[in-house]
Length: 177
Image (tube, rainbow, N blue to C red; front, side):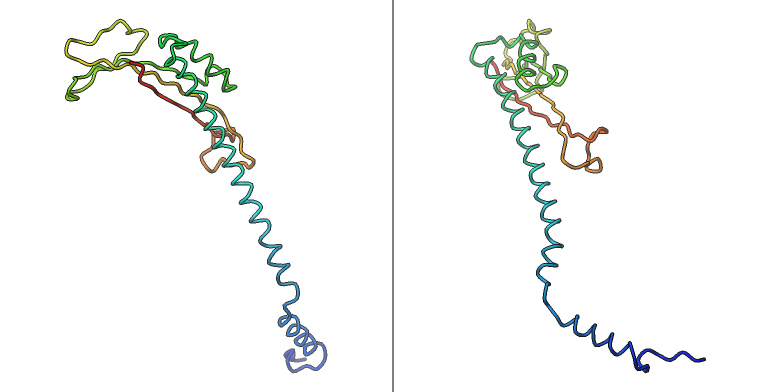
């Protein structure tokens, strides 16, 4: 028995072809279908923007805390050699562990003309180290604060830490002399 093609048979195929042509020409519901496809993409983009804004806000907060810690030295409320006290205050204000804050202070000795290679001394350990005659001394203080940030989505593929968080750093430096 030979198979005949559906186009030559009378019966169900001409009716199906007619149905497909009618469905293909209709545009009822096209806008609803397009909206249904677009809404999940727009929603994911919106959540990504909210996540990015949260991370940026945390970074700004950390930088403000670091700046406030340095301002105490600049206003004379703290001594630049009291790095442990500055570190503890910054950690408390940022709501992080003491190990997440680093403070450093250094002395730079360089020629007044700006020529030559400057010499750096860490203090308070080398605080008594004076600059040689003819060199200009500059003292600096730096505060770094690190905080973990968890995103709404698992973004390990985007450079996150092993636990899925991102480390956000707020830092500031100031010349104190």
